[in-house]
Image 1: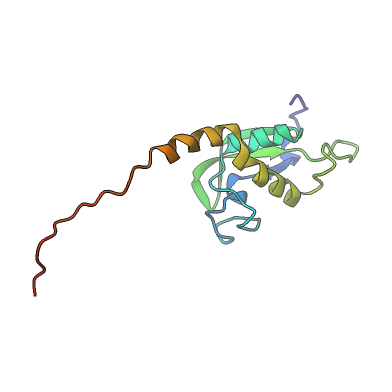
Image 2 (image 1 turned 90 degrees about the vertical axis):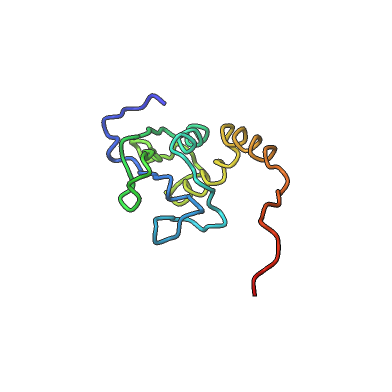
Length: 135
């Protein structure tokens, strides 16, 4: 979205780890594991924020301090200069995280990835030596 990026440092920071169901609270997850989604990416979060009509920007060179191997974060603007909300249903960071965690599993890129994975699963193959056991 075309918004002044000069005050981007005042926008809400959103790391993917905040809504990752694979992480613990100590590792950085901020919402309930049952409401979180599995391994979200910055682009998925960015797409969900644009779907919610919130101004946002990806900072791909940044990393979460507790898990610095996973790169990227999203900056989101919740309120206008006058204090009114961009999206009336989202008034806090927590609500933003819950809404995005609900939308990420339905992301078009995610549904396409999972289709080949489920069809490529073949029947379990039995492999082993067999024979007599030693006593």
